[in-house]
Image (cartoon, rainbow, N blue to C red):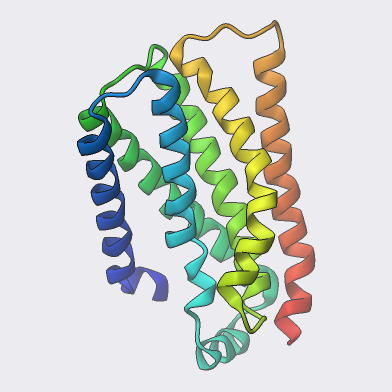
Length: 205
């Protein structure tokens, strides 16, 4: 409920999404499908850094003490994961609509791509929520999150860009697409489990 009351954060990220995609439109008009795909996922990465990662970094010590008094560590981190996942899903779907309106629509399998976008939004939000929780305990919060985050997120982004080519009509080897989706889903589950296990140690600090 406290997160939802901070509507300036939501509208700030929404303005960032719209302005960034509009600048891309002015610079590139309607790029080919490979460039379109790469730009889309890079925008999702920066949306996640702006929307999800800051959810921990903007918390003051007083507010964290308040949370400590009303909730347990597992409930707190699960709530953060769910909220950040929902925010990222909304932002990803909005950016997809803006991409189609301004940068063209090279998609052939639209609904398959939408499913991949939702899976990717969940993956990015889970990873950056956990990283933000860790880096929030350090002095150089933003720098630490960048140092930890990008080596972890780059393989995930590459996997997402590879899977999302199915939305552009690329044919995969038999079983390859489902294997990659299962791998990404497994990574998501692993991140959630790690967050639930590790966050109580940060909570005690």
